[in-house]
Image (cartoon, rainbow, N blue to C red; front, side, top):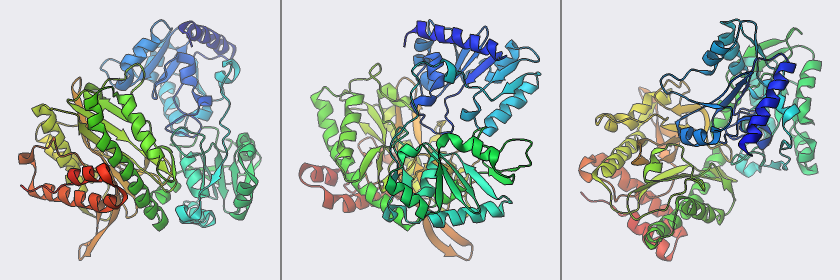
Length: 596
């Protein structure tokens, strides 16, 4: 699209706004299901602004236009917005106003701001309404200008839905629904509507390919004590899937029928998760409904993996480990030979993973950041930024795959040649943090916030910190980012429980120089029971050597070295039967025991 196209669209939008009595309209980066990746049909922020980053919010008034995004995209956004009506708002930079603050400066009491209620959560809309009301400004959630103005708007995805076999799912849908209904009743409700696509896919034991990197399908699920209804485009459902759903007690209706279904139902008590449920996936006001706001009931259920899911993770990690070993054996000689770039090595890793049985897709866009690009936490190489790899310095490689029996997420920081003292020090501090968290033993009921300091302690002694979370859950052939549990500095109250997956990924990032991150996916498991109660531990699922070349061994404690030796011994034991020739020889060297 040209910048003239953006200017024309903003002009047409302002005409629409005047026609509908709006003083401003806000375009988020979300869809009706609050997903991390958004299908093209709902990329309205990119359509109106031309900015194609994964995070950002565009706001248009009758006289001004602005786009908010974070530091990952400052350079790209400045270039893409130049010559358009949009001003770049750099989030978290001193002096940058928030969206509601900016609107309150420009608008008058009695003006109306519009948002599309289908792509804004109940909590988002509620907070915005409250902020605007302080200045007498109203909020309208009923309009979608893109529906009227977007020529050639992509259709909603129409890919077939597939059954996730019970051998991988581990529990029938009818039993999951029975557990969910017990929790709905305990919360004082009779029914709930479910918007997050990973929650729907998990409870229905179905998967799809509607969303980039996430094996989910566009739908809603309405569950009452008597019945369950899946709102989905019927063209996605084969006769086999329809029969399967009937056998599990789930009826179907068209995707767009949710609002009318809620409007025609007799009033009852509805449980809603305001963080994930959009404004229109709720019962109509004024008709006797009792709405109970509650955290997601499914997220904690889904987070605790059953025995089949745990076994699936182990099998997936074995296959992923084979692909990673072959890749890492190839990488350094290839860089020495010349001609490799960030994108070419990312493509090579994806190709090696695709050779493995049950491979379905990558689990997120690969982060391959060489040298200074490694300091950009969520950097993704593009044709504009792709950098040749030289036989020196560090490359941060964060990647993952979707296998039908498990999802993987791993980061390794790889020395491609000589390193500076600073690079080696940062690498060692990150490794120490990774190991200290991995070695943790903790009582049942501990939350991730209480463990976070373990990953940061060593670097804190050097006046170093990082701004992202230390760990997140990982889905079972589902989304690579899963809650409700996390390990991070700000308080996350969800306790870590046996059967939960959790990443361990501290990092250090020096702008303009390098970045270091080391990440394994872990499983929370039982450790021991004493007179003081039950204690838990983290056990690595990821099977891949951690490069030892950059380590400053005099900074490592004896028990940290022992942990690394034990981890590498396990990696070799499990991967060596699956490798041969040069790959096996590389693995043996990469996992050699360290004697200090």
